[in-house]
Image 1: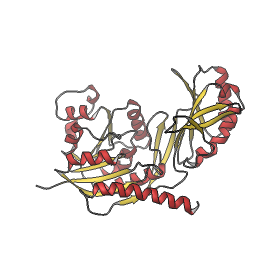
Image 2: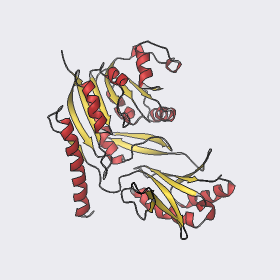
Image 3: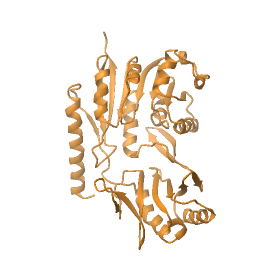
Image 4: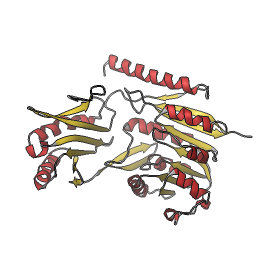
Length: 361
């Protein structure tokens, strides 16, 4: 990697960290942990438009200002697997009219452990001719292929990849399903998991996790708690999380599909839920709550819920909404640790992890 690239990356990261630091300093005066990303070849997911001209199909993106497509010749921020697959796949598409015709999008989902899933998006109904052509390509490249068109999905082999994550002496296996949410920067995600593992080391009692996704944090933290109750609104994510816990032999976790508002109602006994028929909430003794909300942050109901617990682990992909949420959290809790993770290099976005401890009266 050339020095100008590394210098430019460090400048971009410093600008983001300084911007966040200026907002958090009114609440926290100690040092911030900074966890950088590789400047290149870090992204495990990529989505492209397909632009067609007289020379064939091309990878393309949309200009944010003109809203017009522009051709992508290389994509250096993509992981090595994606970079290696891009020219091979495009050559195969341009060599087969069945694959190329009415193709409008290509999506890559890869893992640090080397698996790859490619989704081809079409403005046409896919038939046996497409399936045969796509199967021939799948047999010649190191990746699985899915075809999608309106109300149609053809899975040639599998619709998921399996990531392997090593945390200390443990190796965890995560199924990551097409269309399901996954962290785009695998190396930084491991840093986030390691930090959360360290921050909850020696914990007692149980963990409540809200917005658990496919069990990304749940599996990593399972050994630090007696039991974990994890909730998520996405049916696909809950199903995947349950599978991941089973595959890894983790038996102290319970995954429930419900919103944080419903969870609050269930904990307070306001209304019963059939989804909880096999779970007795009274058997849990939550000492810690972990939240990893979307960019919109936490709603007032969820903030009121998490204030009940001694320790709050808050991961945020939007420092602006995080700071807004802190206004409602800090009257009862004090920030004890802050870490920033460059999950999104070369952008204005920054992932932040906070630990908040209940203040003694």
